[in-house]
Structure formats: structure tokens, C-alpha cells
Image (cartoon, rainbow, N blue to C red; front, top):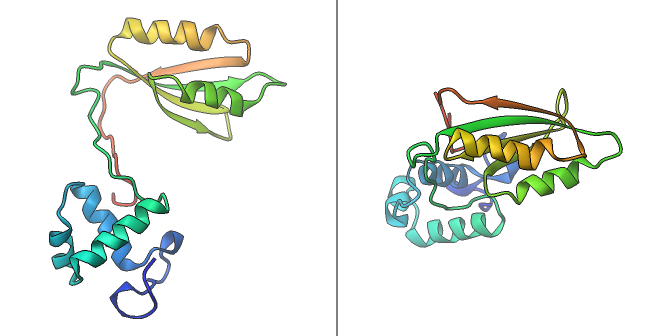
Length: 165
């Protein structure tokens, strides 16, 4: 996103055409999504306007979203499961993915290769609500050949940022 030469030049091996400044802005915002642009600018040795413009470009190009993320477990949602879904022959995995994408309890839908066709993450307040979700939205569907819920027992890591281990 940066121009040629200088501190905004493309870094070797950067992903998606991001330069070192864009990558650093993203890392700083991952650490604190409310960091003032003046603070980011000072750390990078560039103007606040340059940071504002770059953040705007990153948002416009859908590389960056700045959102508030609440921890569902801290909010009392105690039932968490990853569910492996195998779609029945002659049914479209994309249609099933769209169905689950539109459910409030589903926080993650991934089309995968391997044992399953889809992996979904489901978070409910109680285990009874999770069981009800599985009955109503999984076991009752004719387009799903198999459903394998993997109920979480303890969360050891939930990394809400990508690219910065």
C-alpha cells in the first residue's frame, strides 16, 4: 500500500502487498484497537495524516476491520463447540455454509478438505441451548450426512488477532 522507496516501501516477502509500515500499523492496532493515530505516527516516525490515510486504505481494501470483540466466556456463555459437518452427496456445501453463517449462535464457518466438509463454531449460554441448537439446526437437516460436535471443556488460547503470535 505504501509508495516506492523510503520507509513505506514494500518489504521483501510481505503478504498481500503490504509494506512494513502497513504491517506495523496493523500489529499496533491488534494490540490496541483504540490506539491514537498520533501515538502510532510517533512510533513509526511518520505523520498522523499518513497513519490516518493508511488505516483508511486498509479498511477500504478490506484488509483491516476495527471492531470491539467481547469474550463470550467472560459474558457467561458456557457452552462452546466446534462441529464437524459432512454434507450428504448431491447437496451443496456452500448452501449449508450459508445456512449456518446466518445463525446467531454460529461464530465461525469454514469450508474444509478432509474428514469434514464444514467446520462451524457454536457458542451458547448453556449446554441445554447447545443441545437444542444441534437438534434443530444439525440433526434435523437432510443435507447433512454426519454431525460431530466437539464440545470444549477448557479454553487455553483464543487468539483474536492474526499474523502476530
